Length: 272
Image (cartoon, rainbow, N blue to C red):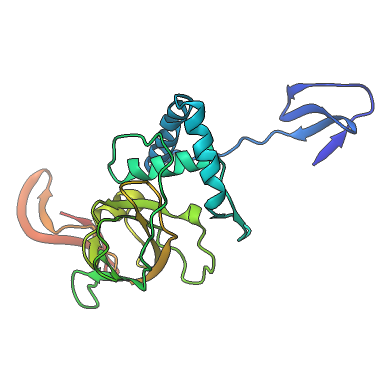
């Protein structure tokens, strides 16, 4: 809610309201504290981008002009699906951030020549389980692509959390880097711990979206992303490990029961 005051200008914060001055005069708005998520992957991405700002300032004028002249030949798709060329600075950051993501160390100062990426004909994802139903505990995801041989390109794999299968729109911001492979192996890869380290234990059902970008190790340019989805239909592992139960009466041990789990109404509640 916006309130426009008529009794003079004001500024500052008071009682959960923020006052400012606009075209219509003094304005009062409810104070909103911005959400600032700080996951490990987000902090890493911000650190990579922040490290490149001083590198851009260290370039010569001729080098910055070279990046600015190269930028109009590159297109990026915005949130509305429209192709927009990046600025020279944005292109410099993008290429060098891609190189850092795949393990490169040196910053490219001179604008490079964009490579010709091969077309990814097929990209698939499938959930792998430790045992057949009903004990089908999720163990990993198998990703595959064709053509299999994509040397000398590296690959950056991103993934979403396990989302509802009814969710129709998975945005790029919903994806996190789970693997940077340099060089990209031929044809397929299996990911497990890297996905768990970013998103944690999955629910028994859901759909995970994966994306794959090729990255040129010489220039830092990345290909458009291709996507694949993997539905999950897994059982929740029993967190209660059978153990030993000591039975006492008046603090006197009378029995020891091994390999036991306490249950109520056939539902495990605690291990030994």
